[in-house]
Amino acid sequence: MKKLNNIFLGKKILVYGLGKSGISTYKFLKKNSDVFLFDDNHKIDLKFNQKIISLKQIKNINFDRIIISPGIDILNCKLSKFLKKNLLKIHTDLDVLFSFYDNKSITITGTNGKSTTAKILHDALIDQKRDSRLIGNIGNPALAEKNITKKTIFVIEASSYQLDYSRIFRSKHAVILNITSDHIERHKSLNNYVNAKFKLLKSQNRGSFAYIKKEDELITKKIKKNKYKAKIYKVQTSNLNKKFDKITNKYFISDGNKENLLFIFKIASKLKLNKKKLTRTINRFKGLDYRQQIIFDKKNLTIINDSKSTSFASSESVLKNLNDAYWILGGIPKKGDKFKLSKTKCKNLKAFIFGSYSKKFLKILKNKLKVKSFKNIEETLKVVFSEITSQKSKKDIIFFSPAGASFDSFKNFEDRGNYFNQLIKKYTNAE
Image (cartoon, rainbow, N blue to C red):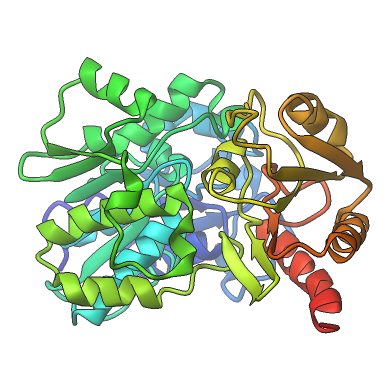
């Protein structure tokens, strides 16, 4: 499976960042290249610590390639000066993957919906007896997969960080689901963020396929300004309710998840997947943890855990379809984030804000809907359940969709989502 003139074979390589992707990269390359390791956390405990080198040692070695983990910010890390001097040597594990395998790949990016779209597509391929591997931000690290054959299909969830750092990677099928302002603190501008996403299309050659959202202004504006070698399909996402008569899965009540399905339908047609089997896969899909996940559903109450939400845009796609909903939000608001739902759309919603950034959220939302603020999630839930009990509506919905980053009080969105689930158990177990 190795390509001729592989740029990583027999080279002196620095792997920077020893999370899952960094460790898998080291294990993948160590037999055929001279690989050294570095991590900002010098206390990291590894079995192969003889390959970990110091900052002083790095300065005295002339590396051919530098492979960095997506979580590393070149402008704000221990090797910042060194990396700036060696920008042309920087690669990612996706570059390594592409240099070794000629396999068909389907790479999915966008601000919202990447994980769900990638997982459903992977499930559909598996259900139809295709050798699919789910890698990238979801599933295994790109280089951890074993027993790759010519028939293996890589379904890749790619972040803007991965795409931004990748130099030679390209994909047979490239998907940009949507783009809204995100990760500006890292990319420094919206334009830089958009450019990082569009590296996925820019790298494609003739005979490739790209799928974009027709109604997304940031995407269509970029398409008009540039020429791309791939055949581009513009996925129309308007008139959503007319296209899902055979989809009975409650998970797809939101416009965002319906849009994800439209992309899946289009890609599935190019891959010649069976439509009936695809529908069966979709209706069986249980959703990903903390991504619009229904964690409780009984006659009078539905509870949705959407801890993954870190922006208003990701929450809005569900909110616009909810009635009598208690929206719980909080965390660290995204810089320049705007709430776009109209006052009319919000008339049956109540917002309950938690955390130390409540005033910032309150300022944005106060003219759109009823808002209350609280110290933390636990205090918020006490009031929400008290209101539900006293009002006794026919059907209530608790929608935990923070619309802010989790790092004010939690390790990550999974930690936040798990904490919310544990609190919910105290109330629902009593029912």
